[in-house]
Length: 156
Image (tube, rainbow, N blue to C red; front, side, top):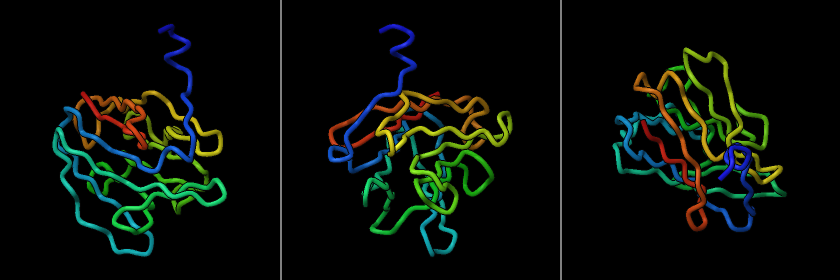
């Protein structure tokens, strides 16, 4: 694979993708808070290596929304509620765009990256967090299509 192919956004069809999977491949335990629309601040779910969380993706007129246990997701927080290390879901309180956006931490303040764009139906193959997730070592997120899901595998 050439370098330009590695950096190129990959495409998908909305009709074929209905799930987003967050998979801890071999990273430290990640305290995940799934912030739901209209709900109180949730407790953390410890995402251990080898485990995954699944989010349903529903579309309406091309606009994507993420759902967990049947409730609309606003944010997937990867550091127990601290600022940064967040996946802000499409067209939500924290993200007005039809994208899934990742917000890094202290070494890249206010750095946000669209990792899935539901307007162009594209996703990035990989993205990183140079200061690590929840204070851990530098992290790499590798996104692939697995059946009807886009999976983001988190590794050291």
